Length: 167
Image 1: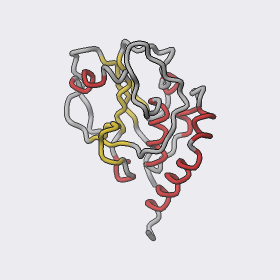
Image 2: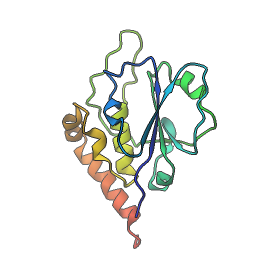
Image 3: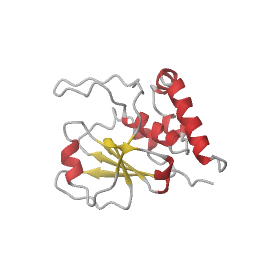
């Protein structure tokens, strides 16, 4: 049996908690938050960094906690510099569509990309430790699940096949 998914979220303290898709995860079992303040290093436990430039996340990564950095794309390099260690970077597969209405007057968001809570949920499905509770407080969850139903079903099937000892 797979252990529950553990998550470490490092949040940029300057980001609004009112707009943050991860705020409803506070207090959930297995989820720990740490605030990032520029040039104050954060010591990391062994973990796997969810990052768009990483190798593909797989069920083999389920043993370590997932590290999710929640900041603007603009500040992400600064946050990463203040994390101790070099956790392996893993990405979720392409083909997902966000339901979060992103708007920035200062910086351009990448053409593709998910809200932090969406990426974390997809990672849980991929790891075979689906955490639907991640989406309980997310107001765009029904739209996200609807837009990505077929792709999520593919990941669930892949995770089941990986877990099947007869594979």
